[in-house]
Image 1 (cartoon, rainbow, N blue to C red):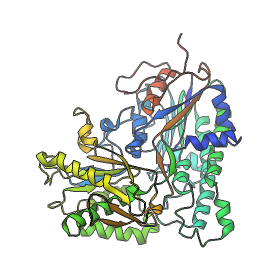
Image 2: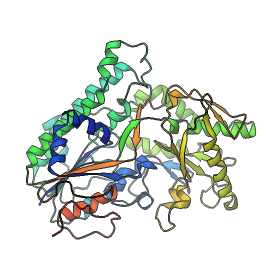
Image 3: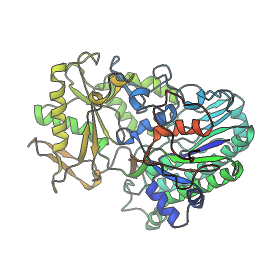
Image 4: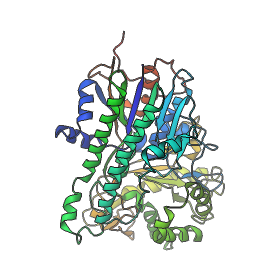
Length: 508
């Protein structure tokens, strides 16, 4: 029996619930009525960049190692873009065997070259994350471009936002969604398949930039009618995806089992992770009276990014990956740097320059726990200077808590800082209850320009032959999707998968 998994990248369940209640997502509403739905725990509560590798490997982040598109390498003292040679992780569908023909499209962050295996494969077409476009078999690219044209998904405009720019983005995402619908239909019709996994990335991009207009710098001076047109515009992207799902399901037919899923959600962006480097520099100054200086190449690169970002859109991903170790190798003076921020997204990621683990480490192992304690107390002490409200909800010691047998334990952050819901634009100045001289003026505008950011919960809706209505699945995990797919295809369990089979089909 065939199975299709349809991903809506970073789709927020609460927003979907609201749209269904208002009759604006009829496809998902119908699937919910016909089958069963549930919530999925996700590693996005620690690092949102780990969700897709966790899904497609069926393993936890410390086992597959990929939690961001820039990953710290302690033996090289720099960051790299994860690649197949360093992180030997492969998708679960590559182990199905020749009896299961596959149709895979736009699953994000799959490393390495295109592997069709027993079927067809496409990636990098309309994903949110910047990635090279890969096709297998080779002639597939010409076929697709002949049928749907060149891809219309725009590159991410990371940085300052404007109301006209956001309206332009809305139009681009609607066109990209419609094109992805046509592309998916072409792939599904191309040849027989037993398993398909197709992901819509436009919801992810919309969530970051169209969640609200708080990061539009002309929000208070722009045309009022434009502000009105942008109100709730993310809902239009969700509606377009729902319509696309309806077209795909009509093509697939009622005899196919369906799982629609999202690995994490989306909500207002607190923004605090973007200022962690500044917070650590301000702490250093409050403690020592000295400025914590970044490396000259690192500083130059960040300055150039601010003025040359439109040009950088045209830099090939492969070239960006080669340049990344160069400019991150001199992020700081490692001879005097005890702790430093890692590339991060939703949560704050901090690394200790530990002797024996980092190539140029200076912190003795005997001092490690004490320094972690100091940093925890510092982050816990941060307050809105006016209201006294804290900004940190909890802190996790990821490296220390990771099992020693995990293959990628060494790459885990030492501290992961979770934030409260207070947003940066609501907090002009931070003080510290621990450091009387600490004062940090919070930037009004986020460097990313992202008004939305990730929430940790995922969800699924499953329907089709044999899938019970309202099956009592309990709280699941995104790790469960891979073993569930194998079970629904009638395949034997794969012992490398760390999740469990969701109870979608009544026991016989």
